Length: 329
Ligand code: ATP
Ligand code: LTN
Image (cartoon, rainbow, N blue to C red; front, side, top):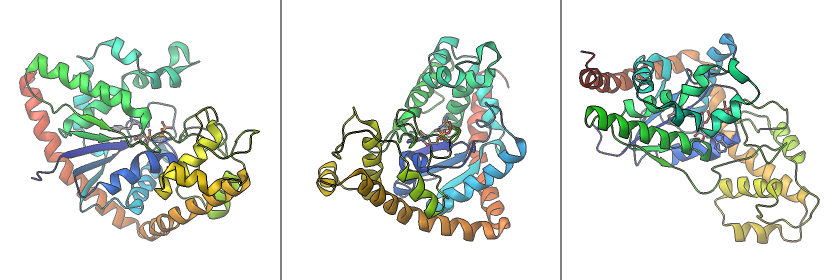
């Protein structure tokens, strides 16, 4: 048993992983890997809450796992696994659903956003999905959940769900804490800087994929929506240029003052070109490692099988306790 604080985080195989996932989540997981006892999960059961293609899901799970390793998740130091391979996730999710008030779920802004326009035909899994996310975290007794800004509300709900369970049935779960980095916690779409960059958003020029070719990256940045002004400064009133500067800041590690000084007197074209170069440089080794890793599919299968072996005993031990206190054994 490690005495380092335990981390759990998840990512959905709902499409091509993008720069927002990298800056808001994956690179933080990689950077802090040594400090924590890490569990990283490809949450395939979350990706079925919206209409999807089974064949596509199967290949996206593998692609995403390989991308995570290519980004620097070390399967020795971190437990990397696929959610549906550990059936305790859905068992705990149901048990938690039974003590989660409907109002808590209806308040979730992501549910409101994703269900808009669907009326009563919206899948009920989209509503109850935060209880599955709470189960993911609580099953491993994780103390820390590193996520992008959009997931803060869901982690806070997981805290409430844990607190309620502990009150009802006695201390059972560690109450988790969201950890959100200041820079890059919410990368916006290049085609519309008022919307979060997202895997499930359509639009060829919306997101930069972590496996995009350099030419495509250049093209996407050159088309990025900005505004009709000229100076290059961080300004919340100007989301387009601010988004580009934020990505630059996240990847360069420089302060906003240094970055503004660098682009003083220059045009948007210079910013886009420099940023595209920085992104291409950051993603090149990831793409290369991805290609090496996927050249032999059996390696990935073995790594994922080893991940489940490490995850499952912890999940089982939590479930033994939960079934006992709930009177199910
Ligand atoms: P989907 O579009 O299917 O909802 P997504 O692109 O939002 O997917 P997730 O798999 O839901 O990505 O999220 C994985 C992690 O990446 C989460 O921690 C999430 O907060 C973070 N993340 C997602 N999009 C962004 C973004 N645009 N900026 C920063 N972090 C993000
Ligand atoms: N719901 C998250 C993904 C996710 C997650 C988790 C994140 C599922 N389970 C547990 C942190 C911890 C999302 O849509 N980004």
